Length: 138
Image (cartoon, rainbow, N blue to C red):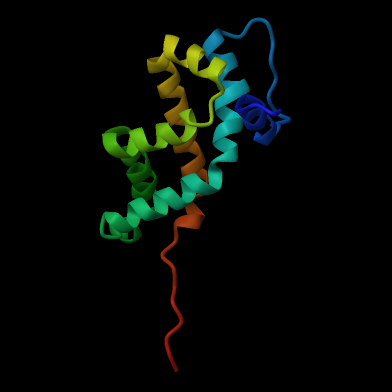
């Protein structure tokens, strides 16, 4: 029988650019072996969640310049605690039991790494957050 942990690990994408070595800190190793693949796997969900966040905040995002949009993403992740916790839950929910036990030993530092990666991923996909144009009825 296949266990939950096996299924989670099999679902994760392989990131070819990740280089692991013995000189890495435990946090950096966890980031590269666990966080980055999970966040890549969850990318489409994270984008949809942020689109929903924009809508729930009255679409203010669409009236901002590019620089202010980048800051908006950063502020949403770092200052909106409910939103931040929701993002963390989407990632932590993909941990194996062993990964969760590692995470709990240094969750504060790992949360910072996690949110930095999520912020970078959302900012690099900023073109996906353009206001949708609807066709006018003719």
